[in-house]
Structures are given as structure tokens and as C-alpha cells.
Length: 300
Image (cartoon, rainbow, N blue to C red; front, side, top):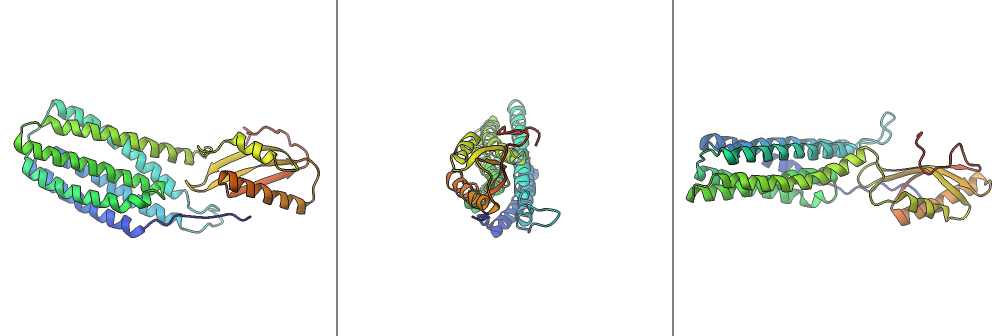
């Protein structure tokens, strides 16, 4: 059974359109913030600027991930999207912490804001952010990289809702602390969402065992196959969020010919594919146990 390289295709046009919308939002909020004196709009503009940079990184990562493997990069550039996801989700964590800090400071030291201008600009930002989020929604289910970008858009959309709400309230009531309260709630929510994406990307970069796989279950299943005596020196990791790689050593019950080992390898691959969704399998066959028959070899 051969290796499967199945990649969910991400719509590049939608991503580039989202980048264009975010540039428009950033420029509009900078101008609106300076005219209205709204620190909230200026902060949101900086937030959108960081998102634009993150989206550009996501686009570059998608381009590189499609490049063919070479002698110097035998796996190709598939990890580019994971690195982009790690950076984007990590930057989101930093932004959320800064938003929490700013919300607390402004709660005790509110500043006067022109609610009408704030409302108009924030509404434009809300519509554009909501449209951007919808553009990325489907692709966020296919790619961790796009998911991290989608989280940025989700954060922007919720921030825009808060700013619009704050603008409406400020037109009729003098409650400047409300904006700080909404910002705090939104930041904490996005912080929670970003932690999950960051942890997943970090684990892939660290080549951790995929969370849904049990190495003991893999060992037991492989060793239940006829003529397999022992599976050891096992390594299982994600190349990307979709592709799982397994390598290890197999000790056979008896000495076998190369043709027999090939048939046994095919059987093991079929079982690993069917039971665990693993398609990239590399196994070293041995008739006698090597230096160590431990499942996990700390020396490799």
C-alpha cells in the first residue's frame, strides 16, 4: 500500500481578499481614531495591522507548502503552514494579554470619545471583519494555519461589536468604562481560543505523538499480526496537522526472506491505515532483537 498525500485545498483568493479588506479597515480606523480621539479605534487599528501581517504570513506559508520536495528539503515545505500557525496563534496570545492590560488601565482612567464618529468607523470595521471571517470559515476547518488567521478575524469581529456597542452607549450615556469591560471579556475569550491553536501547532513542531493516538494500542495491534514478535524503537509524529508518520523496528518470530518481509510490511501498513489513520510507515525488520527492545528508545 503506497503513501497517501491528501491535502484539503485552501482557497487562496479568499485569503487575499481578506488581506485587502484588513488593509482598508486598518487605514479607516487610524483616520477615524485620530479624528474622534478614540484610543479604542486606534488600538483596534493596530490589532488589525498585526492581523494583516499574520494573513500575509499565512498566504506565504500556503505557497511554500505546495512546493515540491528536493534534495535539501526531502519533506518539502509542508511545515511552513504549521510555523505560520504557531506565529499567528502566539502573537494572538500576546495581543490578548496587551488588550487585557489596556482594558484594566482604561477602566480606571477613561478618556472622552466622540461616540458618533466612533460608531460610524466601528460599523464599517464590523462589516468588513464579519465578511473576512465568513470568507475564512470553511478553510479554517481544513488548515491549522487558516484557523489561526480565522481566530484573528473572529477577535476583530468581536472587538468591532464591542466598539459599535460602546459607540451607541456613549452617544446616549456617559459610561466610558463599558468599552473597557467589553474589551476585557472579548480578550479573555479569544485568549482561550488561541491557547488551543498554539498548543496544537507547538506539539506538531515538537514532533509529539498525535493526541488521538495511543502508542501502546499501536504496539498491541501490530504485535497481534502473525509472525510479528516485537515492535520497538517506535516514533509517531505529525508532519502536518493531517499527515502522520510512523517509524520503528519489527522483530519477526522467524527469519524471513525479503519477499516475505514485503508482504508482512504491506499487512502492517494496511492495519495501521485502517485502525489508526497512519499512511506514512517506515519499518526496519530484524530476525533478532537489537540492542534494546524498548518501545520508546531515548537514544534516538
